Length: 251
Image (tube, rainbow, N blue to C red):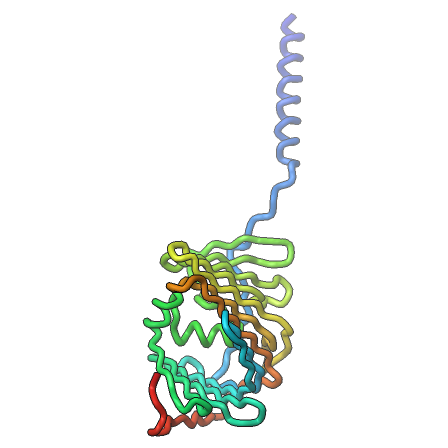
């Protein structure tokens, strides 16, 4: 009888071992990557040519632009409309100045004013990143990462704004940014396409920026579409000529 009890005990242990082994064979879902390799455009000076289209609730405008950038310092644009110089833009660390040669007037926008208007944090760094296809906010330890079939998603929180970055697994390039502000309902969507080499990195030759924000008259939608026809980076120093004629009115 003792032998039978031992046999049953042994069989029980054997079945328990099999059950444990079976559980170990259950496939586990892939763990999200702990880090994301994002390929970014790095440079001292950048210059290029692009076609820009601006659309809002009321009208659409299209211009050609010569663009120059000194990293983390200044963004300069000379705008032409149908072969005629239409104006210029200068963005520095403090503000953005837009000069209209057609209307003979100019505008100065402080970043805190723009942030309040759009209900998003607006700064020189944000504008530079958006033009180059780099992340709006650098990678931080508190950010979270989700893995999809073809993309890695970097999720960031800045105050009341949630930012989702979609990075292509193969190219390591940022292809889409979705920003949503929880208290106002404002949103920004940026989509990049047509990546080609500039220097030793891939650069998005096409991009679309869509901004939706609340005003007293309702939801305002603004869209900026840019398509580069030329883009180069290097160390050669560039000039940024900019002046406002005295007879122009400030708006």
